[in-house]
Length: 421
Image (cartoon, rainbow, N blue to C red; front, top):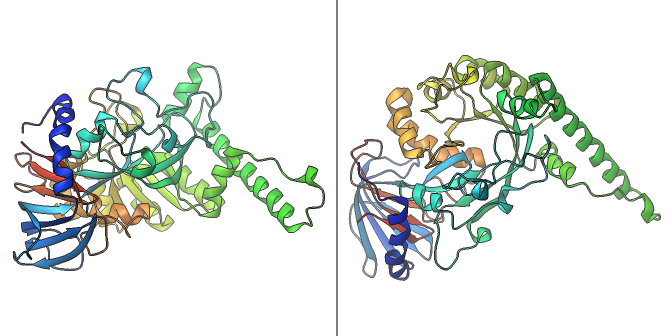
């Protein structure tokens, strides 16, 4: 399949800019095969009506009311959701100047936010948008045991004027990210600094959670007091405030874990502190289906085409997502972080491989749309094509998961963000 280079994608923005005003108001997307990912019949001819950035109606057939700009495609789906990536905070040049996914100054960086590194003009956002990815959860990298705060953003890509990161944000803070496994101990071991073992990685996480519990109690005691002595008011601690979000259940705790024993440790910590657990990567998740199912954790699986580059990824299976889903575990697909150019795996391709290895067409599509939206807590806005939701729509000239098919157009918030030449 031929795709535009990153430079061509950027140049096409100038052409698309004139289309934004034309397609910003009333659009009718006509599909030969419409996948709304709702309880309605899927893969039938249908029409999506869009006005002012929102879906106003969806109906079967091909009739379009007067006054709409019509777009047509063979297949139409909701915008795809990458459930965990570093796109937007890890740049295409792969040099220190554009690598902001890992704050490697200390093992606990709970206070850092993806929001504050997110570059709305990063060309990789435009790149993945051309493959139908319209929403991403951008998360800190895999170096620190307590990595920081993830955020969820739209991917309209770099523009000459706007939008700002705040305009792209769906959830400025969506989760607190924790990392287990090889990466933390390898990085800090080279510095002769803790953690150098998996047990110390877990100890650092446990200490952070315990300190946050104590911090919450201090503030609860202060708020319950008469507050007569200002000198006794607790000092603010941004790390502990962030971890407290997970302790209170305001946001989930995402634990990145590859090996089965790391998955067990994540579940153990989550149960100890009553965290809303989401597992990510879960390379050996297919070996832990009963344990994960019993824990109630959701799984962000991937990347499907993960390289077998270390001991903890040596048991990777293309059937991982399918086995987890078949066990009744809530599954979404993710692309994670890559340290080679062009720096981003493509969720569309990862989903296609998962579909061909047991997950099936609709299973892979759900794991990239509504199931991901429900796990991330954004299903009220995205993930399916329904009246009232954001008008994030992808148009294809064939089966989305066939490599010979193309994304022909992408609409984000009711505006054309990509159109194939």
